[in-house]
Structures are given as structure tokens and as C-alpha cells.
Length: 431
View 1: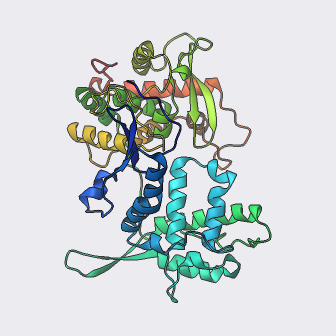
View 2: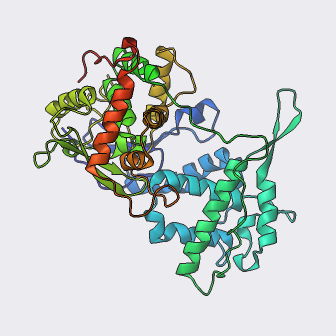
């Protein structure tokens, strides 16, 4: 008997499974990586009572797991923050409507940054998060920032080694600044108008050190990646890699927002709808030029094949053999997580014998580089990526259909100037 779906929300790492009796049972299952590291919050059967299972997970198991993961730092956070403290400000920020408007990936970054500042131990042994924000000064924030910049680790011989974590410290200050502004608008009398996290003059890098950059893939590496992906049975990843190269789309859009209805719908059969979740921009991208010639023949052939087998939903799903279900699951989870995809991409990169530093994002960067090498103007590149910046183009610059067609033609012409070995062969058995 097929059990009905429930609308009851489950906590982290909590699952429900059907029993032979026709009822549901609940289980707490920490992630595999935590079990391998001897986490003391072990997997546990929670019984069939939803309320009892929820109570044990939220009040016993998850606090134990978080305590182990944070090495005891979460034990120092009071259940109910003192009004007016920085911990209270963080709660105000997370309860505000502005928080819900932030994408999940940025939310996780903000949570880590806020926790990094709040859990910093001060000279008196207390946490920075326990202090009243009315007592915050620029000098105090700068002092905590200086502490966050340097972290001490131990090498294999047990020696203490200091290293800089500027990127994490800067991200923490950015999250705190945003939380302060949101809190000030929500509680004007409780949160001071002067934001001590503003105008800190944060440096992106120290002298002599270059910022970390995403490795850029070449066209040859894209071809090799797609061939290996199809051999391993990851046809959807192969097509998605070509899409992010051609249309300069972020992986969050490719796997989390690109739907069948966006590609060549009945009302616009010669276009594709491109949505950029990060900045909210969207546009209809032409698929044919003025003479009716396809601008992306290889990509369109593969997308047409996918559209012929699906009626609705996300375009890219796990089309390989899955150990849990025959149903094709999305590559992206409900929490906008793409860790499983990243693991698969690394597997394909290794099978193709490519540089191990390559990621799925490397193909998007490769598309940008190809566009620049093809002498695309700033307007043509920005029309493709839907970027907005007054420093690069006047605010009245138009992202027109003509720019999109011209840019696509230039890139294809540059690609065909190369040797025949660089041409894109259509991978076999693409579904």
C-alpha cells in the first residue's frame, strides 16, 4: 500500500520510512562524514510518534551533534538570547523578511560569518555575541576582526602554526554589517543608528598574495569532460556543462531553475528563457539568427532530445542508475545543496584525466574567456550574463536581441578557427 505524503516538516538529519504495517517510522541519521569521524551523536530509531521524535531530535540529538561539530561552541549560546545583545540581533536578522529574500547559499555564508564573530572569546572569557550592541564601538569591532584574521593550527609534529583567514574574516564582517542594518530598521530605538561594521576598509588580499580564483576550463577540457561524462552515464551533466559554457549560467540556475517550460515553449519556439536567481534578471535568449540558422546546434539537439522525453519540471536530473529509487531526482536538493553534483563532477574530471582543480563553475568561466578572446564587447558579454554595473557600462546600455546574436556568432566563429580536433562532437546516447 502506498502511504500518503505528509506535510509535517522534519528536522535536519531526520528521515521517515514506511513500515510493513502501513505506518511511518522516524529515524535520526547523521551524515556519513560525521560517523566516520566518530561523532557521538549516533544514528537512532525514533519510533512512530511524530511529536516524540521531533522533541528528541530538536532537544537532544541535534544539540549533541552541533556541540560535537563546533567543538563545544554551541553549548555557550543561550537558548534565549538576552535582549539587546549581539545574539539577539542575529535572531532579529534571521526572523526578518529580508532574511527570507536571501538565497540559501548566501544564508549559509551569513550564518557562518555571524557565528564566527559571535563565538569569538574575549579577554574576560565571555563571547562577543553576549555583549550588548549598545556598547559596541568601532575600536571593539576592529579588535575582534584582528583576532578573527589569524587562526592557530598544529602541524604533524605538534608545532603551533599561524595562518591568515582573511576571506572568512571579511565575510564575517559583511554578514554582521548586514545584520546590523536590518536590525536597525526593525528596532530603531534598540539598535544604534551608527553601524560599527561599516566602512572598515577591508582588504581583499595582503601584499604579495593574489586572491583565490576559480580555475578556467579550456574548450578541449570541456570536450574531454563531456565524453567522459557520457561514458560514465552522466548525460545530463555533459549537456549541462555545454549549457553553462554557451549561456554563461551559474550552476544554481542550471540545476535549480532551468525548467522544460523555459526551453522553446509553444508561444516562443525560437527562444529560451534565461533566469538568473542571484540578481533576479531574466531574458529570452534567441536560438536562431535572422536567417534561421541555429546559434547553438549541438546544445539544441541535446535539449530537444531531453524535452521530447519530459513534460515538465527541471531539465537536468540524475539520469544515471540511482541506488535508492528509479525516479530521476534533481541534482539540487530542497536546501539548494549541490554537494552531490560536485562529487560527481570530480569523478568525471578524474576519469577524463583533466586538472583536478577544475569544477563545474570552471566551464562557465571558460565561456566568458572564450567570449573575451572572440573580441566581444562589454555590452555583448553583459547582455549574455545579465550583469549590472555602472562602472562597466552606462546605465542606459541596452541588452538587445541583436547583441545576443552578434555575441553568439563571434564566439562560434572564433571556435571554428581552431584545428579540427577541437570541434565538438555530439556525445553518443544522449537522453
